[in-house]
Image (tube, rainbow, N blue to C red; front, side, top):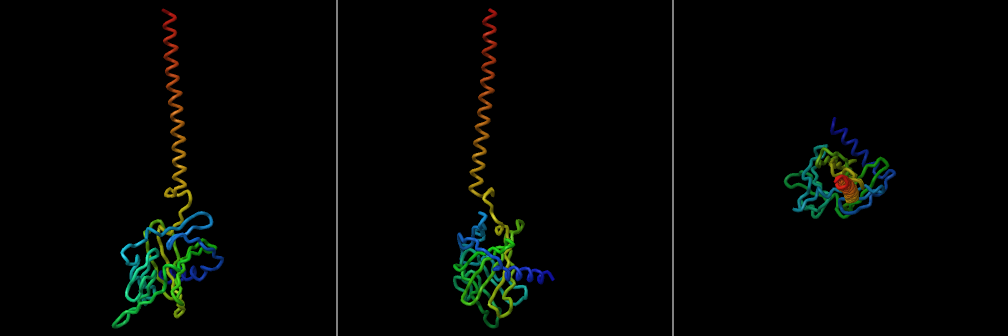
Length: 216
């Protein structure tokens, strides 16, 4: 039941990926910048050893396995330098199909704010819906080829790294500048107050000294 609900959600999102969609400007193979200045940055999901971030994830139909890496190319079986590889268990040898080339990645945002990464490999197309969840490091749901025989493959990547970074995010340089400016302003204010207090004390001592001198 849960798999069916997930399947319908991912498929609906993918089918509607182009409805009212606008491009999220690609800044790297796994990041983009939205019109409102927010960014999506999946670079934390990079791998540097030639292996996929997600490997042999079985689809919800228990038919095929998929390996995927959104930031780096990998090779597996007959899939060479790909972003997504489909593995079909066969006897005596599994079949491997390239269903997503990394350099074809484009980021689209639909009218609901859903970001989808689209990949092309020959006549095959893959759609990876990004779902923001601050409690999950990274999880891949593979719907697989839908409809059957369509050469269209659907996935959902759930991760805290799929969450948009706003210009005022603590990790954003713009906010760091604001923090520095505010810190400097507070520091300057405290310095002025300290100087005023110090001057008041000195002035008070001088008055006492003058009073004592006049009495003697």
